[in-house]
Image (cartoon, rainbow, N blue to C red; front, side, top):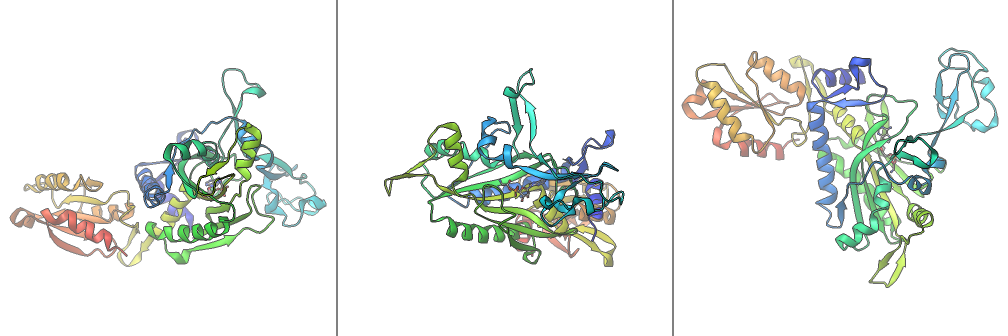
Length: 442
Ligand code: GAP
C-alpha cells in the first residue's frame, strides 16, 4: 500500500493538511484538522496515562520551548547535533552525506560519486557539518549574546528541572519525569509525510536510577515500551527492536535501541530508548556550577543518577496508527480506517433513518444520552449507506441508527464498523453496549 493513499485520505477527511496550503505550502510542516487533532490527542493521552497514572513514581511536567542557551552548549547540541551535508555544484541539489556514501566520507572519494539528480560526476562538495537547531534572538537586537534555540528535544527541560521536581514531589530513586511537547529540527531532507518534519511533538520520559541499575532498567523499559503499542491497536508483527551500532550512537548514549514500525515505505523508527548515563547531568553541573546530585537517604550518599530515556515521536506514532488502520475492503467497495475504538477520533455517529416522522427528535435525545460518555456526532445528510461509508472512512467504530421501530419500542440499531453487523439495543442500554464492545474489540 502506498503512503499517497493515506496522505490523500488525511486531506479529504480532515486528519492532516499541508501547512500554508493557500501559499503553495510550507516545507516539512503539517497542520492537523479536526479528526487528526482528536486522534493525536487520544494517542498522547494513552501515553500520558501509561506513564504518569500506571506508574506511581513517574510524574509529568511541561517546560518551555525556549530555554537558557547554555543548556544546549552543556547538552552537546551546539557542537554535536549536526548532519553532514553534500551539495552538487552543478545542479545545487543537497544530500545528507550518508545517503550517497556508506564508507568514510573523510577518505576523499567524493570526486567519483555521481549526483543522483543531474547525473554529473565530480561536482559534489566535501561534506559540511550543518547544525539542526533553529536559532532565534530574544529581544529587539539580533546579537550573539541574545541567541536562543527552539528546543530540538524535550529531554533537557526535564534534566534542568529534575531536582526541583524531585523535592516538590518527594520522589526517591528510581523515579521518572514525563513530558509531551513540541520539538524543532531544521531537517534538510524532510520526507515521508509527517514522518520527518521540522516541527513535531515528542513524548519523552526520563527515568532516574542508581548507577549500576541502569542495564536492568534499560531491559525493563524496552519490554514495557514494546508492549505499549498493543493499546493503540498496533500489531506486534509490525514492530521490531533494533540496536544502534557503536558508530550510530548519539553523543550522549552508552546504549540505544529503536522501536521500528513497518511503514508503507519500510521499517523506520518511531521511538528511541537510550541509556544516557549521567552525561547530561554531569554536563549541566559543569556548565551551571550548580550541584546536580541526588541525596540517597537510604544509603546516605550523594550521586549523579543514570538516566534511561524513552523518547517517542507523537506524529510518527500517529502515522503508524494511520498506516495500520488503513483497510481497503474491496468486497464491500469501501475504505475503512480500522482504529481501535479507544483512540478513534469519533466513537459513534447518530443517524436518524429519515429526516421526518419524529426520528430526528429521537436522534437528539440519543445524542444527549451518549454525549457525556463518548465523542459522538449527529448525521442526517444523505442516504444511510453513504453516511455509514463516510464514517467508515473517518474510522468511527459505531453507527447508531434511529428507525420507525425506535418510536415503538425505544430501541436503535448499533452498527459495528469492521463487520457491518447490526444489533438491536435498547436506548437506555446504549452506553453499556458501546463500552462492552470497546472492551472486547480485537
Ligand atoms: N531525546 C532523545 C531524542 O530526541 P531522537 O532519536 O533524536 O532522540 C526521538 O528522537 C524521537 O523523536 C524519534 O524516535 C522520532 O519518533 C521523533 N523525531 C525525531 N526527529 C523527528 C522529526 N524530524 N520529525 C518527526 N519526528 C521526529
